[in-house]
Image (tube, rainbow, N blue to C red):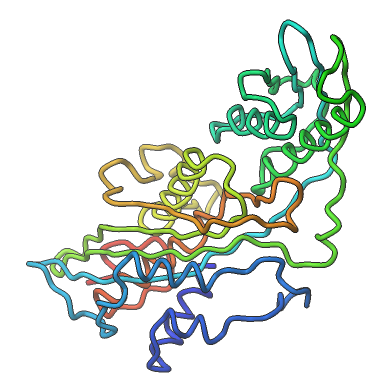
Length: 340
């Protein structure tokens, strides 16, 4: 998305249009790749809400017009999208014990994204019991198999298996099961995946400062507005969105692999020389989302959020850097020498 979203910024300038307006005018009615209608496409709503919150209406469209001391200031925007997929093969087991409540088992993993918390919530909601009545077991190959944690598919794949097993459990045993009652069930295929284009969307806004003498670039503000269906846990979701945006900032300003052409190996392969964002780089980053439920995304009504926070962040920063300096940079990272 970096190349296309920088190109969209250039298109807006060539047409004499606001970058948000050019995106709204070119909003498609169907997925250009598959031809299928979008199940839920709220990119325009993300752009408009972000513009309102970011103060976009105060923006002078001309580049290199804002100066604070020796710092040139600019703002930029970019769109985000990421496919909403569900991996096949996840199986969940639910067992009731009179002493321990509901034991929910699935071979999923928690990489620090909140899987323990959110899958417990999903199980409790599907069973109609408090969260404290659920004991979740994950992270063991002896448990029922689960798909890999990747591609923003974890919650949709594992959560659907748990919700399906919970429905099977209630249909078989009702709301007053006997001690030892147990079921195991797998997540079914989502029929809507063959009828609709399922995607999450977002709008990324950035404000940057570029020193006119040294070319040093800093990101003073970032805002992401996302459409990802039902948000199961707002706290963990916000953390994932901001984490993705931080990764996008790293892509924009720092991350660069240097290859030794003699041996074909990466020479900056440690954190001493491969630079990533630190706390000092993150000044003001916020993420919000639209209040919605995607009825086509499965029983949870949610879509994956693990990676969409990355998408578009680097382009928004690059577009903001152009607005600040009048220098268009089309490759990353945005190092100071490119603005001198």
